[in-house]
Amino acid sequence: MKTNKWKDRKDIVYSTNPDFNYETESVQQEQVTLDPEKQRLKIYMDSKARSKGKQATVVNGFIGTEEDLKDLAKFLKSKCAVGGTIKDGEIIIQGDFRDKLIQILSAKGYKATKI
Picture 1 (cartoon, rainbow, N blue to C red):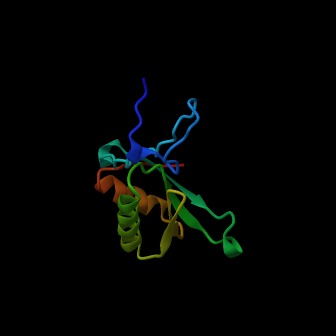
Picture 2 (picture 1 turned 30 degrees about the vertical axis):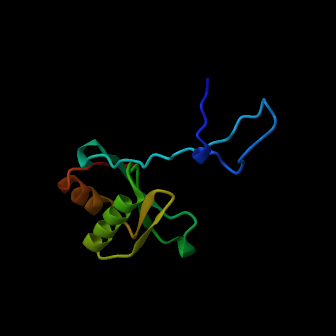
Picture 3 (picture 1 turned 120 degrees about the vertical axis):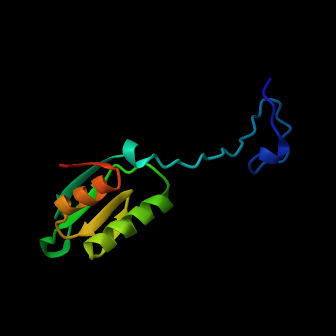
């Protein structure tokens, strides 16, 4: 028999329907950041959908929390002395810095490959 705790019920307090099943709020588990040795990052250059065809280097494949992704992006931007952003779980660095990013990430223990 399925038990329903009243505190977990979503939007309904009581129902007279005997066949009614209460919806419960699902608890989302926070994603855990993998160690740098277990990360497999892909680095490639992208110029599509950029104003005037400007180049941008994209770091893809990071598995972890949003906060750790922001910290890594900030570290990479400071090492390359350029701007960048995070979009859809990818780090976008302005300019072509593929080789430099591979060296920086390898020194930190990440497994980075150029596509």
